Image (cartoon, rainbow over all chains, first blue to last red; front, side):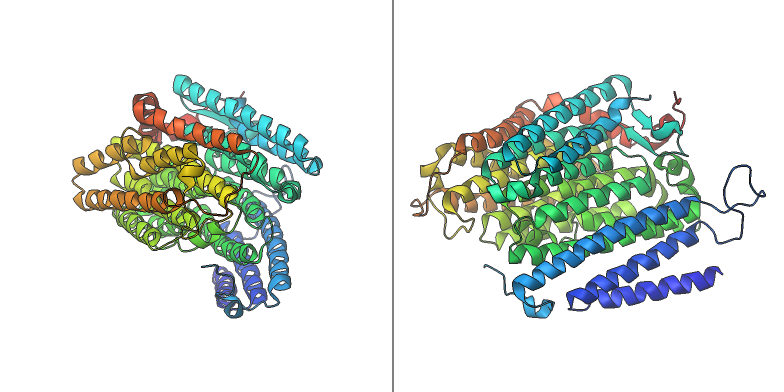
Length: 113
Length: 496
């Protein structure tokens, strides 16, 4: 189970980094999205992946799952969502002012020195 | 000891920020609210410093959940000093901004973003929980993205995008580090980690986690070789915003390094301090060499931020009481002086419409007071007596010699001279020569000069009266070097 989850984490992060190195702004954003999903899965794995009851007091057996990583992931997802929205806005504004979303194309165009 | 004062430096900016969103269309009201909120937080921060000096470490457990189960704010001397100096420079910056920014930018949510940035910075200084530290970093970063893109010029948008991508990547790494820490120890409370982290040294996990966090805070604090994002990003926004960023933002990364290295990494991994020593030397040298090749007021100052961060890390790397005290003194000195230098650049830009040294000239004729203030701030940056930089550098050099770390001492002396050269270059081209023809008189100059003068005066006071601040930084260094006492104080605090 751990191995399977960690493989998925590795695939997500690898694809994320590959897209991050692309010159197109949109692919960079998608890459960061993949990267943060991989990281969220890693957070999930950090709490242990055993089976257990929901952690509600008075309900269920002695074996409960650790709720903390889920709270952490929820926070991380919300933050990632906000940052992605901001990134899309920036990329769009940048495209509108430069009429290109290719970093190679943009390179040096706006240097004032 | 439980104290509600701990959370006020976060709550006041948050409340002010929310209020300022409502009043964003009325600059006059917004200025009044923002400046009074800042002065209020400054008062709280100074009270916090005095409380910590008198009664030791203060903390606040949210929802009355004691550490390590709930999130706690822990305030030792380092946190309190950082919050205090943050509020000092942000108040001066706000004063400067209120008479310098375009009406359009002011109405475009400058004041709310500014307050939310302060909330994030203060939260990062005060928290005692690793995941909470990540959240405060995100709060301050998201506000800084907004401020950096304020005005939406093409160059700004492009550089903000890069800045955002670099920081999003380092945040992802931060989360991986947090996942590893939690998986290996089962806790994220820093006080609890003080006792549980050293057990990881045997399996080698401690070293892996240390490297990940060094990279994360190295990116956020602009250390060698991860500083390349900084100079271009800080050139884009209006100068007053660059000044705030240059003074504060990278120092949050440096603070996080001081905190985590002294609490966990240095006691558990022997490679951390030699590595930091090398990084400190390389950061100083490459930063100053970058500055030498530039011909723009703001770009030179941006490269000097990088170079100066090397000195702070040098204090951390030498790791003696004197060195840490020197490093903390240096952070405080740097925040004051670097912000005042950027504000001088902003005042010059207001008057002549550019920060390009080749187009500037004769600013000393136009405003002799500004030239004097720049001279003092520049000398302080280079470390000339009797200004604050001298005291900080003296402490660092002396501790370096005592620790027989001669290479880093030699590098830091060479870098000081190169810094002086760089400041002379700005002085010569921007303030001497014939006055540039573009000079115009812009209203608000007395307020701008007052904001700069207050920071420079503080630098002078800390230089002539270094003994005033010295007891405080010595307490901070002593607390940092005794993590077990810090951890016990936090874990055993009685919840009311």
